[in-house]
Length: 386
Image 1 (tube, rainbow, N blue to C red):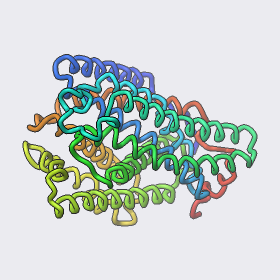
Image 2: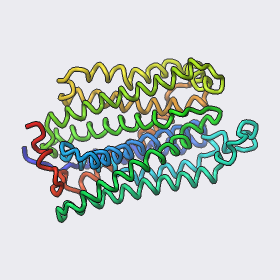
Image 3: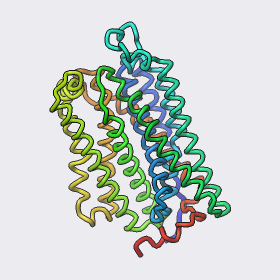
Image 4: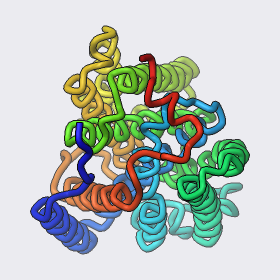
């Protein structure tokens, strides 16, 4: 198959830019009409797409560290998704502008009665400092891995592989700590009454699945366009197995958190689930479990399903919708005891971020050859199971 350049058409680019500005205008108008809801939608969208890019970097590091030769044909796709990380980091910094609209603890006068010992940690300055440190750490590792990949294409030196493996090992250790801080700060502290020791790991599982789904969709679309003919059904099969396992791991953590809180029946913990089982939120609460595990589990169970482009596209779309819903349910019910539906503000924020994400990833995919020619494991990947 003759290779084609991975590029968005001029018309598609114009549409994405238009949607970006329309979504942005909708969000700005929402900050005037309903600031709490608008900024909550912004937080969900910003974290959603940042975590997808971060998850791609985590997957890339895992593949480097395990020397997974089969994945080299997908390496540029993974790097392309991770390339959104700087833009995603900038979008998270802007959350600081809406701090008082999202987080109850940001208004110390109103929240002093329940902050108690948390006051030193839950403050605007401490929050901003931790956010900045976490984002700088992630961007530093992204820059190192990205430069090593480009340098290896240029000279084929094995030292770049060794450097990538070392950086990946350090990143994965750092990621576990920094993402735990980020998920607690950015998501769990929306409800400062509540806490869960499994919350960070639960979000790591969601991040991993959403990133895999995005990489799967991107790889299939590139393969169909003729830009990535090196990806075969065996590569798709491996992506399908990872999606299947990741979704099941997410379900295990979802059920573990829910069951322990339900069984212990401690008011300080059950308040989280009570808010999501009343006021019209209950349908979305159970739909969340269905989209993130029940449907993907049964749809991916047969072996042929993991090797079918159409099937993987459908399941990936379900998982991506499910991940957004999961994040939405983590933060929105705190400020909306009565669910008013997923409306214009939620859609506007998502459309704006989705358009920006596609534009950035498409640009990154055009910037480098889609096959990492200098990678020492390339031959193994090109003949994967053949």
